[in-house]
Image 1 (tube, rainbow, N blue to C red):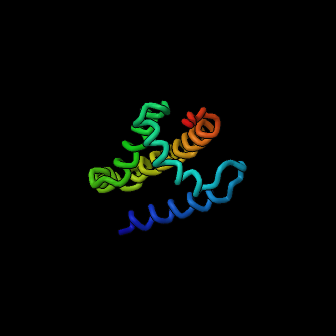
Image 2 (image 1 turned 90 degrees about the horizontal axis):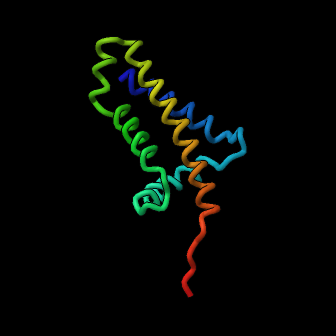
Image 3 (image 1 turned 60 degrees about the horizontal axis):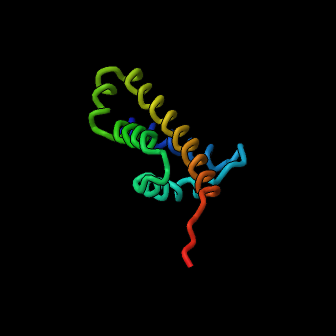
Length: 114
């Protein structure tokens, strides 16, 4: 239960930081809305984010999986450090990749059939 509360607090703080828009980039809602389009464009072979999306998916699965409870049960605080590192990396990766995708989407030539 304590682990869930700590993760909820971390995600709340991360959400507040992302919506602050300090860098002036796309908003959090635009970034989150871009994730399905990014996955679809990658699946179609139009966007080159396959490896990065696979790494982000693996990191998400690791953080939410029950297997991740083993380090916390055995190592307490040190077990939580791997979660903090993974969530921090994941947040940065999502921010960077969605910004890259939105820029690619803005400049990607569209084929218009008349």
